[in-house]
Length: 533
Image (cartoon, rainbow, N blue to C red; front, side):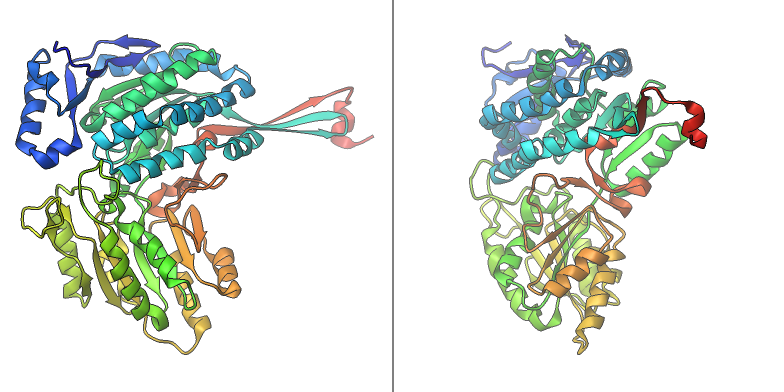
C-alpha cells in the first residue's frame, strides 16, 4: 500500500474488525467539482485493485469493507447474543454513554467536520448537524430521557415503578444525505439497553463507520458493554433490509428514507413482527401572519435552500397573510443573495451540488403552467455562481402561488421536492381575519406530511390558536429558526407521510423501548387488595 495514511474500516462485528468482500472508496467532494472524471476513475480503479498506487492520490479520503450475506447475518447474531447481558446493565451506567458521547464529539469536533466536508456537506451545515447531536445529548435532554426511562412512586405499602425496557436488537438504516448524524441516534437506542446493528450506506460509508468504530465502540468498552452490543457493516440496502425483516433476531428497524418506500417497508415489518421506526420525508410549512418581523421571517424561510433543499427538515412551503405578501417576498428575494454555491470547505457556502436536476425543472414548469409566478432563480449554475446549462448547482428558486384552495394542485406545494425550490402561497384578501386564520390552520393540519411547522406572528391570540389547534407534525416552532435544535424538544419525527401510521415526535430512546409497570408490595393481603378490608 502507498505510504499515505488512508482511513480504512473493516466490518465491525462482535467487537472485532472483520474482513469484507471488497471495498468502497470515498473521494473528496471537492474533487467532484474540480475534476469529476479523475474522481470517478480513481474510485473504479481502487475498487478493482485495492493495492493500486491510486490510493495515495490527494482526492482519496478513505475506504470501507463491504459486507455480504454471511457478514450481515453474523452482525445480527452478535447483537442478539449481547442484547440480554446489556439490558441487565443498570440504567445509570447506560445513561452515562450519552454524556461520554457528547464529550467525545466536542473533543473530536474538527475531525468530525473534516469527514462531513469530505462527503460534500458544506462546512456551515456540518456545524449545524453537529449542533443537533450536541443538543440531543445535552445535559438537559439526558435528564429528560432519564426521567422517562424509570420513575418510582410509593402507594399504600407498595413500591410502584413505571419504566421502559429495551426492545432487544435494533437495526439502523441511515440515509445517504446525512448518514453520520442519523447514525448517531443509535447511541440513544444503546442507552435504552438495546443492541444495535448499523448499516453504513455503500455510496457514502466513511463517516458512519468512523463514528461507530472509532467513537462509539471505544465508549461502549469504557462503560463495560459486552462485545456485540454495537455492530457496523457497509452493505447493499435492499439486501440488508430483506435479511433484517426475515431474521427472527431483529426486533426494531429504524428506517430513514423516502415516504413511498418507507410506507411499503412499514407494511413488510408489521407482517413479519418487527417494530418499524420511520423517519421519512418532510414537507414543512412556514406561516407568516401580518405584524410578524418580516426580516427575521425571511431568514428562517431561506433555510429552505440550505444544502440545496436536500434536507428533510428544511421549510418547503410558505403561507403568508395577503396584507404582507409583497413585503415578505421582497425580503426573501434580498436574503436569497446570501445563499450561494461553492466548495464545501468554504465558510460561506450553503448550497450543495444537485446531480439529477431534471425533476426540478419539471416541477417548476408544472407550477408555472398552473399559474405560478417565478420570482427568482430557476437555472443551473457553476461552482462560482455563473449561470450554465451544465452547472451542477441549482439557483435558489421562489415561485409565487396565488390562491389557497388550489395551492396543492401544484406538486411543489403538495409534496417534498428535495430541491432549492420554494413556493410562497398567497391567499386572496379576506376582510374576516378569523376566517383567514381558520383556513391557515386547516391548511397546516391537512398537510399529508408532518415533520415541522413554523409560525411568525406577534399576536398572542394567533399564537394560542396555533398552539392549541395545530395537530400536524412532531414540532412547532414560533418566531424561531425552523431548523435550529433545542434541548428537550425532538429533533426528528412526525405524523402522516413523515412517520407512518405510528408517527409522532421521535425520541429514539423511547421509540426503541416499551413501557412496563412494576409493583413491589410489602405485607399486603391479596384478598384485601382486590375486595378491601
